[in-house]
Length: 184
Ligand code: IMP
Image 1 (cartoon, protein in one colour):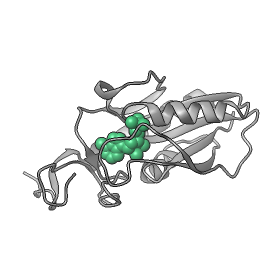
Image 2 (cartoon, rainbow, N blue to C red):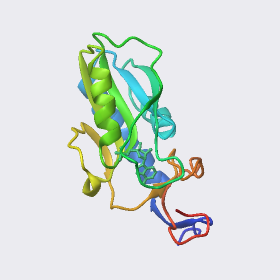
Image 3 (cartoon, rainbow, N blue to C red):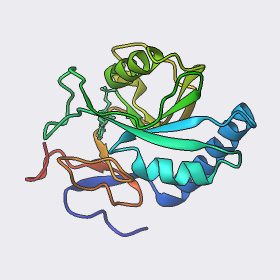
Image 4 (spheres, rainbow, N blue to C red):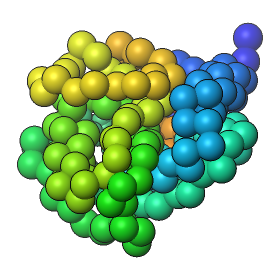
């Protein structure tokens, strides 16, 4: 038995080792797909930073990276459904191969917005790599090209994902304790 999870967490869903192993596999898939076509990995701030940092080191072909930020849940654990661009890319992506790197796809609204937004800039392609897929919650159909783990409908934190700004630094994915005083 491992250590009990810290206060505010119910249980560890994906420990650090499986996260590392799956991220390496995704890196191989991505390397095979792009070969020498130099994609721009677009990390969706802030949740994807930890995953992107590990993923890009698992890719053994040349890549560039950039970041984009969209409005997220704020302090609530369910999306309002309204998505807004908060910070834009620093690179032009016209004619480029773009790989959106997400922490989690839930309803699909954020991703659908991002895909629409990036497509208007005439990239050569837009593909998606997400660490987590909460498939049962999908409201908007979105194509996911590389998926780390499909997870149940539970609110998860850690490895970049937060609740009210907390827990991003955990090296594993854990389920938030919804009944805890600091929970939603
Ligand atoms: P969607 O637009 O409903 O697909 O939500 C996507 C965004 O909501 C993600 O990029 C996360 O920021 C946030 N989100 C959805 N589910 C979770 C979760 O279980 N934990 C933490 N953040 C989540």
